[in-house]
Amino acid sequence: MENIRNFCIIAHIDHGKSTLADRLLEATGTLTDRQMQDQVLDNMDLEREKGITIKAHAIQMNYKLEGKDYILNLIDTPGHVDFSYEVSRSIAACEGALLIVDASQGIEAQTISNLYLALEHDLEIIPVLNKIDLPHAMPEEVTDEIVDLIGCKPEDVIRASAKEGIGIDDILRAVVERIKPPKGDPNAPLQAMIFDSVFNSFRGIEVYFRVFNGSIKKGDKVKFVSTGKEYTADEIGVLKLEKHPLHHIHAGNVGYLISGIKVASEVHVGDTITHADRPGEAVKGFENVKPMVFAGIYPVDTTEFEELRASMEKLQLNDASLVWEPETSAALGFGFRCGFLGMLHMEIIQERLEREFGMTVITTVPSVQFRAIKTDGSMYEINAPSEMPEPNTVDHIEEPYIKAQIITKAEFIGPIIKLCMDKRGVIKNQSYLTTDRVEMTFEMPLAEIVFDFFDKLKTISKGYASLDYHLIGFRESDMVKLDIQLNGEKVDALSAIVHRSKAYEWGKKLCEKLRELLPRQMFEIAIQAAIGQKIVARETVKALRKNVLAKCYGGDITRKRKLLEKQKKGKKRMRQVGNVEIPQEAFMAVLKID
Image 1 (cartoon, rainbow, N blue to C red):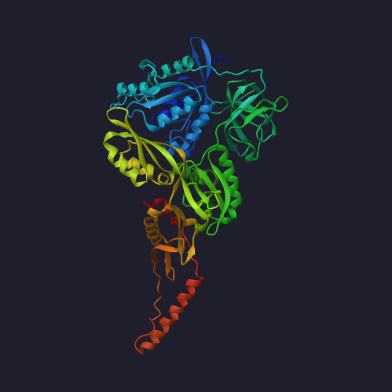
Image 2 (image 1 turned 90 degrees about the horizontal axis):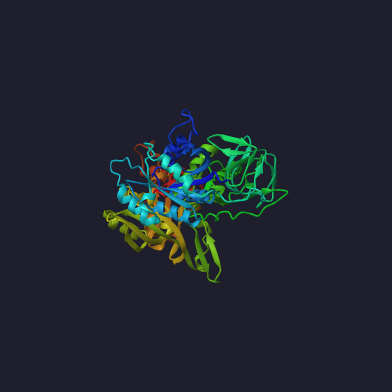
């Protein structure tokens, strides 16, 4: 155990985590030249297309220093705030972390929040200044920022360039010298924590775990503590680029287990594996994930509901931050109400369902969780507009507030404050990190930042501002339910809960958008936005008209009138029995409202 080191790489988006991981794998000879490609650990098509890491990836390297052999277990983590749950799970399986900071960008919001996550778990932090080869790098200034943030000495900061391969040996040496070897007793009862899992259609569920105490052998009878189920360890091993089977895994190491588990609900991330005949205590896992955004996911073809359920279960194995439960909708049939960590997370889940499981799904308007305090004092949680109780039974409604940290260049302060004020935010603090970089703290409603806040922030600041946020609790707000009606019938999938001050504007824009998207019928369609019984906006999709007068040339006007009256009656009847098909784009349109 003296020779094992477990560490992860944490940083803001695009500061070079995956590239640095590539260099470390090359330097330790873990990969052959043939296996090498850029961002080798990002093995999902989506990750390569978008150029971001979505999943944390674990890999083992062997390293020789001063005649001693070391085993280094590396976990490369995502940088985006929507995947911070992946980061927190990786941190729980490690003793140290490489904190990467881009020499041209400096410290950004996610750098700080990931650092605090690591410090909460008492990890040894090794600061690395990356991209020092860039022409506009500012190594001296950024080193000072790192020293102020962590409180280390300037000489502790390792200067590197993952692209050019500068400083890689210094990083590996620092990992061995500064990070403590794992503690644990190889002879104690087995305690191994599951930090990830993946579904393999041939071999069942592959479980990735970190052994804290004891050891596990091939063929052992193991027990999962939270479900109480017992399995045989058919194959165990360590994760290189491919799986590498072994007979024995000791305390302190990271490995995988395959035992032919077929039911996805039997594996929980954060659960403890122990021996069936000599059970150990459960390890303290991770906090349960708190979803920020809720949306409904429905199969386009209602017969695929069970198939979608199976796909969601398999996806949840690989992404433990996805939370879901079944629900029904009058417009869309059976589906699921899902909780996501943010809009990017929601988009990725939808993409993965389509790519990995071949499901075509409709996503409803995202909303956040509100609380209704009823007149009798009881509290009621609202995850979807359809769950909103009748206004006469409600005393008041509370909505979730967040504390947002925005780090930006000084020149963009004005526009950013205006953007946050428009989103009902209140500025709490503003401090200069350097002469040119400002950290601003706002308190604002989560509902306001769910849609396009991040995009707008990036646009205003030319891509420089970085955002990090966390929940601070619920506060009373004047929220109303805005219903959309087509020909007087409510479409529950298009309802939204909005602040009263924005209800009129939101309703008007939504009606205008739907007017463009709904195909014209032989009868007139009225699109109305209503709060309770009060209509706040209306648009009309005009009817297509068939020319019934084509055959009447000349003759008495009454002949024409008779035909037009007949047509008018037909239109009226059609409007009563006709149903309006809502295209998929209409549900997505709501997301694109400014």
